[in-house]
Structures are given as C-alpha cells and as structure tokens.
Length: 122
Image (tube, rainbow, N blue to C red; front, side, top):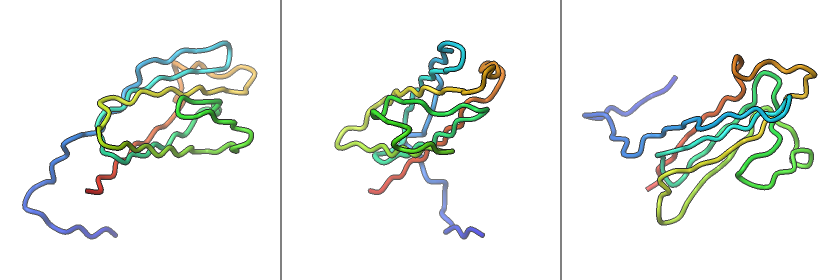
C-alpha cells in the first residue's frame, strides 16, 4: 500500500521525459540496430533495457561492453548523470541479436522494452 502526502495542486514537471525510436535497421539475418532519442528528465536518470522475443543485447553506444565478460542479463541497467548543463537530447543505440536460425520478423514482434526514470534531488 502507498501513502501519499496530499498537496494543494499537482507538482509541476518542468522536463517531462520523452523517449523516441529514431531508427530501426535490420542488420543481416538476425541483428537489429535501434537508435533512440531521449529528452527531458533531470540530472540523474536510469534506463532499464530488456530485450524481447529471443533477442539478446550484443552491444550499445553507452560504453564498450563485453557481454561475455559482463554477463548476459534479462534486463540491463544504465545510470546517466550530468554536471552543470542539462543536455537537450541524449541519443543512443543498441544492437540486438537473435540466435534463432529463423528469427521472427522484427517489424511484427516486440524487440525491446525500455523504462526510463528520472530523479530530481535538489
């Protein structure tokens, strides 16, 4: 059960979060490159990235990641922060791979689930 403190009016959200899929490109028979644009939020944000429909994360634009060393996961967590100036746009891409011999058509299946959360601590 949640308990909320009543306030006289809804709290303003000056930088609402907006995540947009900019591009989705099939690479070869079983890879999918997806580019996203993230706007809004605050100085501390987190992403929860969950590949779906048999896809697995191969790499992404956040860091050089060695999945075999890092370990395969159901959901990947990314923490983003910045200093003095808030970036207007955060653009990133993920490369997914489906090890199935004949993966389903990425245009007709859900490929990834992404949750974005922001934390304002000032």
